[in-house]
Length: 44
Image (tube, rainbow, N blue to C red; front, side, top):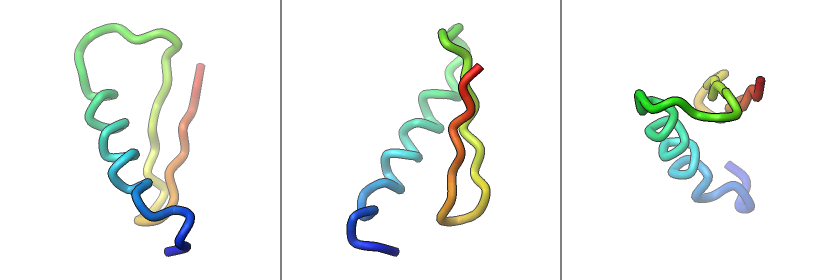
């Protein structure tokens, strides 16, 4: 993994944790994990 991305795995873990809450969020978004190194954030 490139040096400039160190620590982003915990950021994405936190975003996933927050996105699993049952509270309504605005704007609607999804966090998709493409593979172990790639994530995609989709905003409606």
